[in-house]
Length: 563
Ligand code: ATP
Ligand code: MG
Image (cartoon, rainbow, N blue to C red):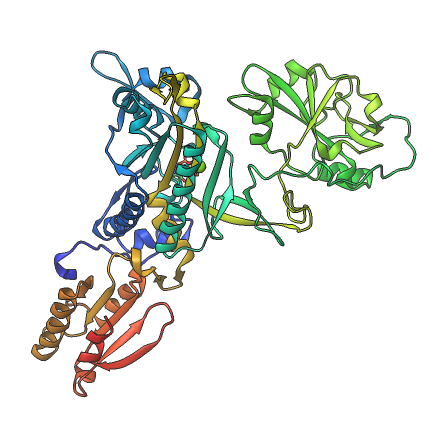
């Protein structure tokens, strides 16, 4: 491909709205352009990278026995009503009506559509297992679209779904996909970690996420210093025995203290001259109907996903001031568990505490020397906080947890019969009995994988793309393409390498050398070959490795021999 005939609108300046490296470089390299919040054009270079990733994904999915299909992006509400998700998916689901006033949505994921297809076409265990996948544009009306295509609203996903006749077979399908994902991300040249994850809105009972380790990752992952344990912080278990027993040998009498305007743990701890781990925070949570008060040690953070799963709620949020007032009779900042009017649950972190501080349910007052005997309500204890640096590993019990940042590029789930039961998707088993399909589902964010690869591979001048997913293998930079000799050598190398299957971008533009060198670095293909008059006098051209920066002079045959 010749640069002059292609469409690569590079930018010299950093775009002001790009917060992360990948977003910045994808815009600067002319790979993507924003159309609306979270909605992008892919320009040729971006699309070429996307296609390379898709091809690796296809190749590994096909090798693992999955079969490609293409389902519609627009999905009728009826299917979503059958699964029950129409009512619980919330605002991320983009809903629309057709001219006959029938409800539809733009698919954010396709469990319903594929389950409907399979229940109509597959009747017997003899036709199982089957694993169907597609590469398709999804839409999720994300609350905070950001970081370019990393968290878009419209984005390309590979989604696959397996259907099995037994638990054992379903386990095997899951393992095959796990391995296929390891192969895919390895082939994409990524440094990643597989972690245990929460199943989220897709549901099911077991899942793993594939995380690309990167500083700008939106996800926090917990890893053990001594065993292989890794889990999304949303999911990572904190062992119940991680806390010291009674710090004070004696229990004191509860008393009220005047704490004017002291609403935060930090303010309270410096005012009372006690450390935050002697204070119990009371947090009021709701799903829109129910309200609970959650108790947690002052220095820890609530894990909303754990709380939601523990309570079996579909939704969860911090209660607004008015809900707090109505359900507890108290004001935010001074809420406490003593004589509170709603259900109380507590994180294990408070279980062994004595003589602690809580809100007094009275403006400007707290209670100190509180003990569980002072709290009338019945309390359910559970693991409801985020794991933190230094926590004991929940798996081996020996190692120490560290928290890393990661970008979730893939997610695999064991769904079981969650969808097949609700949607009455049945097959006849060996004994002639009707059973629901046992399902698994498997997603990869194609655009996000491209962005994640850049987050992991760049320097101040631009991207340093892994070869298997780089739009081109080689940037052939002709310093003076108008010169006959330069042009002849350039064309020779270009034609020869293309015939060898090398993906070459020939920079034939009539631009200053500096502009071309800058663009070459920015686009970050693995190699650059520079052809200039001066070196040609000795029959040499320059061969540069973008990754290690080495730059050597080679003869034309030697350069061709490199590929
Ligand atoms: P997240 O937690 O990041 O919102 P998710 O868990 O909701 O993602 P899944 O439903 O597991 O996502 O979707 C499968 C894959 O699709 C994800 O692993 C991710 O790579 C990709 N993906 C999900 N949401 C987006 C998005 N808004 N933009 C780009 N890719 C996305
Ligand atoms: Mg996920």
